[in-house]
Image (cartoon, rainbow, N blue to C red; front, top):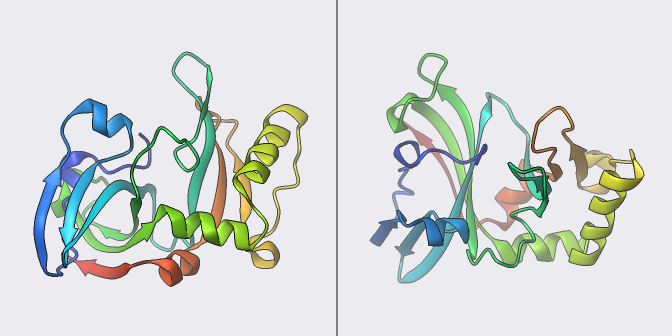
Length: 193
């Protein structure tokens, strides 16, 4: 979807001892949130890749999707809390520099930060600041159906909600600071090409 690198764009290596890598091609597993299956240092990771390809140079947050409207205009649960998604990790990418102004493939990326983060660690962090799965669903519903415009302040609450009503999908997201992802990441790297 919109914040995922295309298959040819996302073949970044963490430059760790890697003994297995599979780029998932079948639609069934991709729909379940698995773009890559990787083995690093003897541990297997089922990964959903996310990259802020519309925002380069200085993005200080990353948005976690709570809900959106599908192509038919039907409300769907977002990838963060959708229990049909079976990935156990995310790779988040913050792009600092690209060649020219368009990402054509991986060689277009000249400077990118990547973080490998456990889905469980994200949920544990959210719960630690008061956002259980049920609380997130309640807030999502309030924003979408009750015009709740109290999106919070990332500097005081550790997170912020956003609602993009200008996009067809009308996604509702929760934003966390980049530092949060770095602090809970299993691997964090800056990759220059």
